[in-house]
Image 1 (cartoon, rainbow, N blue to C red):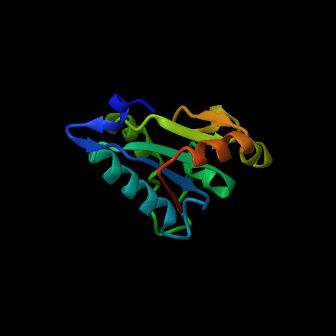
Image 2: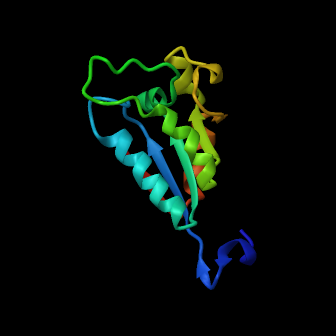
Amino acid sequence: MSDDEMMQEGGTIKKFCYVNRKAPYGTVYALESLEVVLIGAAFEQDVSLIFMDDGIYQLKKNQDTSDSDMKNFSPTYRALEMYDVEKLYVEKESMEARGLTEDDLVVPVEVKTSKEISELMDEQDVVLSF
């Protein structure tokens, strides 16, 4: 990373990666992850999101939340672009194991293999898993 990329208004930009592994409903992890991402982005940090395991379901179109007490918050992921959060990654193996394709997701993502995801995580300053 260049010095120009690291410096912004006299401060250092940190690379934050949020790893989403949990299904969207039944726990607070998915919603809290989204809130933390928006906060990090508001402070102009370099934010990436990775969706793997059941976390991939957070991005699934047409979620039916009628059996839960939670509102479907998946459309909120479309707002990430307004916060300059454009680095969304999905683990290929997790997506395939769940029978999903990129067309099943509410936002555009970059599909990466497990190995590529691991390499991406290694490049981050901070990795938070939800």
